[in-house]
Amino acid sequence: MNMISTGVKSRQLLSVTSETSAFLRSLFGLLNLPNGWYFGKGRAPGIQQVVIAALIGDLMRLAGVEKREVFPCEDGGILVSGYHKEDTIEVFCAPNNIFRFSLERNDEDIEYLEGLTLSAVTDKIRRYSWRKDKSYGSSTLNTTVEKKGDTKASLSRTPQTMGSRSSVHLVLSG
Image (tube, rainbow, N blue to C red; front, top):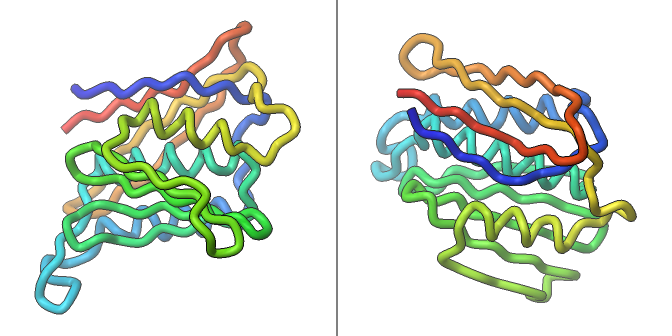
């Protein structure tokens, strides 16, 4: 069993909006990509990349982005993009769990970093939060992914209120 943990504080409990629903449908749909989906090349991302991309997308939502999108990458990685007014934040989640972060404002690079850990990426997203309250409050979001059939998966989230400190835990079992 693999466990990924990162400190994320949240005052907002999970609310499933139409944007969140569309984001998760697109994200989990990437698991159904066939081998060779990109001009005879390309492979579908694994469940671990999808779960990490879900975490990144949720962090972006908590930071105040207005819209999120996901894009498959030829190597099985996932690009998660978030938009807030003139800002675009992107995180590339590589299959080897190394991340790339970029922030653009009006199509100009503000910051671009490669070779980041998940912890470093979460710090960057929080740093560029568009929310006035950057503490994200005090709740925990437990995320469980359950594989169904050969290539489909579903996401189950259970918010739980905690004390003064909280974190997001992803438990991946193969």
